Image (cartoon, rainbow, N blue to C red; front, side):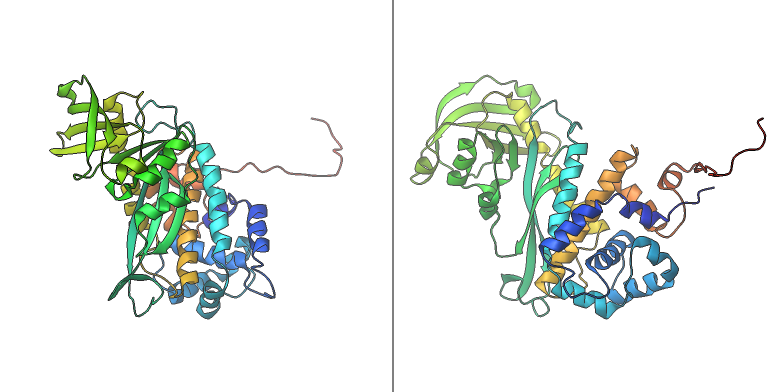
Length: 389
């Protein structure tokens, strides 16, 4: 029989509390706060994400029903929807953004040796964004279109473990290509992007940092072929060329040679054309690397379906960003625990199991593996034994 902590408390035990306190102190999150600290706020929002709560009233009702267990989670303040709404409104979202980045760094170290389908030692990133629609009358700061509001979640996904290594939240009007200015390119890494990120001056910056890019081309790009390599057309490859751009603007923005690969995907009966600055990998590997970009689409689909980032508990920019960053923390923490416990289940299955057992007093391994988990109890006695057996 397991006699330890409740499941929710076991999950929060994996969080680096000293790092959380540093993030709170950095932005003075608990300044003049007598009750309901930043930790209280984080745990309440963490619970809401884990169990898919619908509203602040829903969070309040569920947590108050388990009031005697909240003390063991570190919640010292009284949970009420007005207090939580005020905290989301006023406490800086940077606290939870910085903390999420710390968890991301931990997760990336755990998954650094994982295989993503291709034998490649380089770090491979997929860059993309997803749009989250908002009501303009409720979120007037989220500029997108004349009668529509939205925000964009720009994500650089590390394909080893599908861990987001870089996230920026902007309003819907910000074009994807501007995010390339925010990247700090890593030498030797691959950046896989769709055609929306084509800006040859920015791509040339990546090239100067000795980083590799693979990007889908636009049909109106003008170029001059200087060399063609032989390809095995039975693999779907159509051509592998060395080119120079010859457009009035693009020629100046990217003055060096590029590699152009044309590939036919028989599975979807669609032809793709890629540009890359890598000339050493086989053309088929380049095509398969671009195919891995789909992982970032699956990441967006996963968090939209299983976390609360499509409807929000507050309408201010600070409340929305706080909720999104805590949702990212939940995703990354679940990935960390899954790796540390060496669980052979999907993140979706793991999250579902945890969501319905949040206040149960069972060990996580017992829930996942459906086995009896027993804790070793050691009886400590300071009294000397009178008899030797």
